[in-house]
Length: 377
Image (cartoon, rainbow, N blue to C red; front, side, top):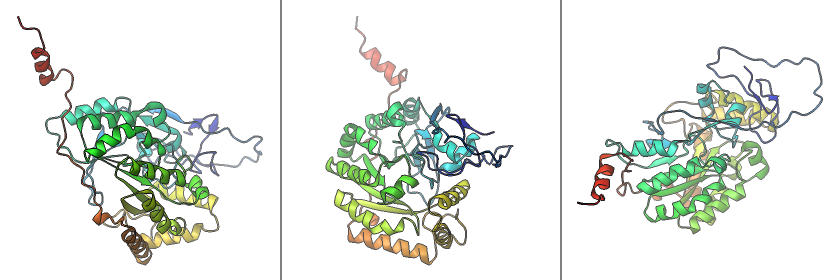
């Protein structure tokens, strides 16, 4: 049924962006047994609806590290401290995961969030397992680990503390300035070759960015984060993602130039992906925000995706194919090479050899050490 938050029904037919939110509607979960349809009853709205308020529940999943075997992804494990993301990026490929919870990938994804209060303990247990073998872990592969609710709950900080104490390599992807809060952990990890950070910058147009990513840091603030991390000695790169042909690609070279000037040492670029419900949500957003360009943008995306809005095939789902995708990829390669940000030449090789398995309370080694500290007769 419809989800009510802050006194307003964020139903399937909600049109226009609610204040501070990205999605223009709240379609039902594809697993829902019921469907809702908006209907105009003829009565004019007397007052604007109140803002939608964020609700945070508890994620009760029993494991923290997610593993993948995708040939398109250069890592095999990740941790996402939160489900859903308050940044509200309309293009987010993680939105469909909210359907698994029986919630909408639309506004529910932005306002009905879940945290893992025992994330640090779960991570310690998984890292302590005798069969665990360390390799670079990505923090925030699905949703941003430094989204606004992190200021209140500190789940990402707790996870990073465990990785710091265990000397476990980690790569962080974020579009938040909150990552600077954790410089006290990041700097010593960087000195040991244990950490790298990628800052996602989609556009340099602050007005467009505010509509695309309503609760994320401004483009200028993100570039300042790149500068601060580089000055602190933390390896940092820029991720021009997602690249949206006809909307954000005009800034591609300028983003790379600004990032290089700020101290970035590498760059990446990913074409927009619109899996499952994201295609519908993005289409609706275009009709509201840039109606004069909507068809042009969708046409360019289809030209990169074999005539569809999304291509789920391995080998092409991240990069696209066809003349438009090839041209965008060539522009990125040329600019990255010119600025010294070429990924091939700047691969981060984080050190997994320093890993120290955590000692859990009650373990045999812990008992042995307690016994050795006992007074001798």
